[in-house]
Length: 241
Image (cartoon, rainbow, N blue to C red; front, side):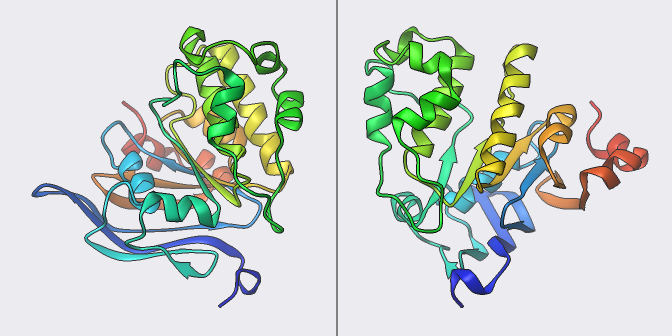
């Protein structure tokens, strides 16, 4: 099946993952369709980050199917998955602290892809003018919110077909959260498909088309953000602290 034969850019079926003997993910399934933003919601420790790491090959799934653009990527090394055009932005903002903003961007550069938005430093700086002002600043001298933006921009330099965002609003000031939401909406309008893990329902509602809720490593709910907004019982059961 070619990439053009399916609406699903990413499909996960029956995913199981372990940390040692601990069974972290049980029969996880989800889809990311072309041109949409999907939120994977859940409380802390529910399995959100492990799901994204399993898709990206950073955690080796015990079993299950992971298909990206019609190609099975189960068992692939992370670098092979990245070369196929799946971008990953980790929760812990792994910037190269001793490198400047421009040098960080160069570490993420890949060739343009015919079916993905093409990103250059100039285009990215137009979207992120604050980073443009810091292009020669060392990443270690930036705030947490600025480093989060830099991590996203560096990933975009790989011209990804889809993006995995792990807790993009975590630890950010409210004004930066709003900027992050606007960034994700802009990226969607550029044609990028995005799967994000989140605890913040408000943030997810701003940017997402659909949602999955994960609890104790299992998908407990799937629906549109509008449907989730009307389902107080589900929100109370799986999202309130």
